[in-house]
Amino acid sequence: MEMRERVLKAVESLNYRVTVGDVSAQSGLQLALVQQELNSLAAAAEGSLQVSSSGEIVYAFDRDTKGILERKDRNAQLKALLKKIGETLFYLVRISFGILLVLSLLIIVVAIFILMTANSRDDDNGRSSSRDGGGFFPSFLIYDLQYLFWPDPYAQRTQRRGRNQDELGFLESIFSFLFGDGDPNRNLDERRWQAIGNIIRSNQGVVIAEQLAPYFDNPRVDSEDFVLPALVKFDGLPEVSEAGEIIYRFPQLQTQAQERTSSLNRTTEFLQEQLWKFSKASGGQLAIAGGLGTLNFVGAWYLFFALSDASIPSELFWILPLIGVLVTYGTLFLAIPAVRYFVLQYLNRGIVDRNSYRSSFARQLREANATLKQKLAFARQFATKKVIASDDVIYSSDKSMLEQRDTDLDAKRFKDLEDQP
Image 1: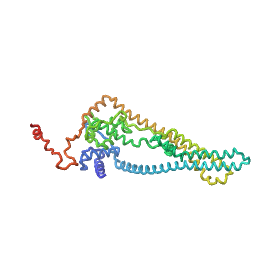
Image 2: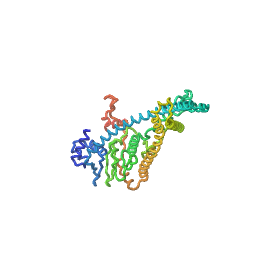
Image 3: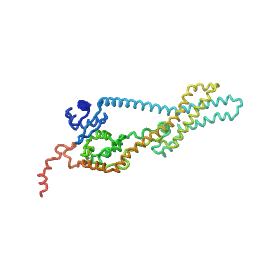
């Protein structure tokens, strides 16, 4: 932070348009440190790179640079706080829905049983069919609930042995039916920087903006500002050709401890986001979740209308305050997945558009025109790779001083002595 303040103070005193040398002279910091900090500052404060006719790089900043940084810092803190609050609330809501599913179904079964028993008792005709009808429905539900929540241990062991490890359990499938399984692109940034690092390494530490464009969210054809985060991440340096074209060199990625092959393939030629899935649960599990939700919904509304009658059995007075909760829960249990389904369709359309946009840059790179080929040829002039072999090591911390290699023995006169018979 102290270095950032010194560089920012120098930028302000130099009227927000500077070169690396300007800031280094003004702040007294090393050129390499200033270069890295200016890249970081430009990326954070939405600065831009300018190229002079003679090939020098100029960093241009907004006059409200300090304000931009302060607002972004406050926004980042607020977003982090809201994210934690949201995760906590979401977890509590998810747990409460799972618990309410069991409680709601049990309450509905008991209430319907009591209601039908009371109706059967008050039936003057005393028909046996009424008595049978009063007992069949809840017994059937109770059996189903017992099977779902307290399955037979032998059957449960048999199912567990034959079940895929990735298959969700019953309660997990309920959560998945309601809320899904999380963001499929939660590691998108990790995949992005791995791909960018591989691209730079496979091109021997030198790339052009067009080679990095397929891995950013909003690359532009009229500006190369989107490259700045990569310069900060991998300590890169911009170089300018005589024609004013910028290439980006990453010295630290031009050195390897041993020869390595590139891990790039056709599937990583652009950053591809994964589509949202409604649920990882199987079709059968989703059918059970939807069936229970429908049963809960119908049962809750049945009780709502049945208990709207003035003649309510005294045994059911306890459920009157719960009717609103049961109806609301039963409705939300079906409404949330329905709304989520349409939201996911909208999100997936955006993902398809972004993937298509990034793939267009990859296609442009594969079908390079003459101008782009010339720019790539200029970049290859700076490409280099150094592999540090075991023979190049002159010191190792796991050896004593007496065991270290004597570099003086590499002199020509000692080599000539070794060649003599």
